[in-house]
Image (cartoon, rainbow, N blue to C red; front, side):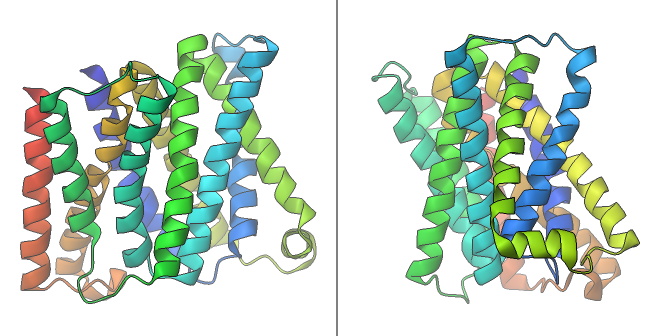
Length: 300
């Protein structure tokens, strides 16, 4: 169950990254430009080549790596598109529900019914998915069809990317597969330069990132990179059938995020602009209970 510890640590780091993204997306470049920067930042993975067991695999393996990297980057772009058009409280809960369900379905289809969960794991999966949706859901805001649509699209690409990543790790050692998938992400990020608006924002316009914001962006991406490595390690360690559980455990990220927001809001209510009411605490508390029940069932 090492994968369970690794993915919990990964989502702990992702909670901090999501707060950083919330800050950066205020007045930040458009989603295409932001995705370009994320893709370019993936090039730092190439620094690892002299220090890890990196090799050049066959054409089929490289193709799988590139497809996985491309699909994940499209998922990133679709997520930022959703966050640009709608509030996070509308996009994130829907994605939290769609991703594990899509992953469960695609895993069953791609494995031709070989990778299936047992009754105990299905119960844990349901608790985790419900907890993930509840902890990030805002009952005062309706979910328009368009926001559900873009959430489903982002979740679809993420799910396919995660499954292909797992197959990559079944074919290759961890660092070789990870770096080749990052190369696919780099190529995808560079393709966004074909958009005139991205070229203008990157090369001609005054940067929306000042020195302070730019340094924070780099730090935030570095933490995100560490979390992404841990998430991929968990994907490599977990059985194929448990990949949907890995996704469903994202509710832990929202759990950590709420705890951080709650603690910071107690000291400085204006910093994060989050309303912590009695109803919100009850809702989050119920969601935490569902997530903890899912974790206990998995641990047992």
